Amino acid sequence: MDRQAVITLRALAYDNNLAKRAGGSLTVAVLFKEGHAGSVDSSRKWTDALAKLGALRVQGMSLQVVRLAYTDAASLKGAVATQGLDALLVCEGLEAEVDALKAVSRAAKVLTITGSAALVERGLSLGIVLAGDKNTILINPQASAEEGVSFSSDLLRLAKMVK
Image 1 (cartoon, helix red, strand yellow):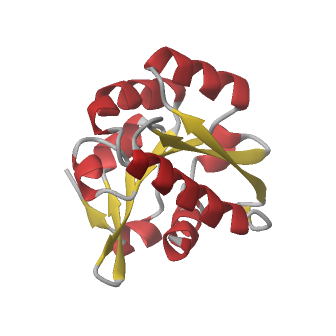
Image 2 (spheres, rainbow, N blue to C red):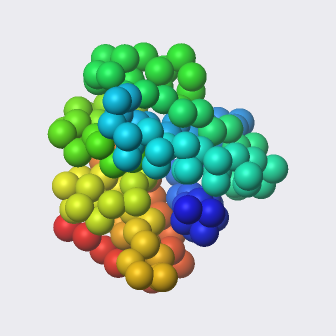
Image 3 (cartoon, rainbow, N blue to C red):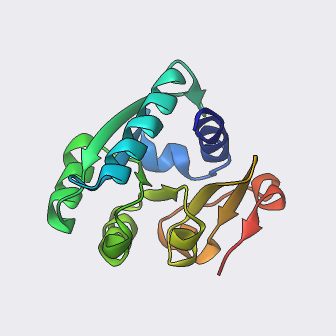
């Protein structure tokens, strides 16, 4: 998880529109499904791994990481607005909520990130996926564009495009 967190932050640095969307600081919400053991565990691991990198700056912006239990789209929309969320890291257990997550992220121009190739195929933007002992960067270019993200060609050359 630590390596995936590093790769995630490095990938965010290649978003040409990040500074415009994020403002002065970058806030990443780690979304999980309350009551789903795998989702709760995954969210803790992601949060811990990203928190270890909290001193790092992404495009000159400080990083804040919050854990957020997903309940419904309306609550998420409110959290995006009130907490200034710039990216949603979607953990396992939220597969049934992908359409709602996409609607919120596209309307608010918030990047979606996941560790699941299947969720990138279903319309989330960025995947940092562990296969064996190797991490792969997956990008859904249509989803990214709809979320207001413009990844640089340097990252696109390293990533696998998913449609």
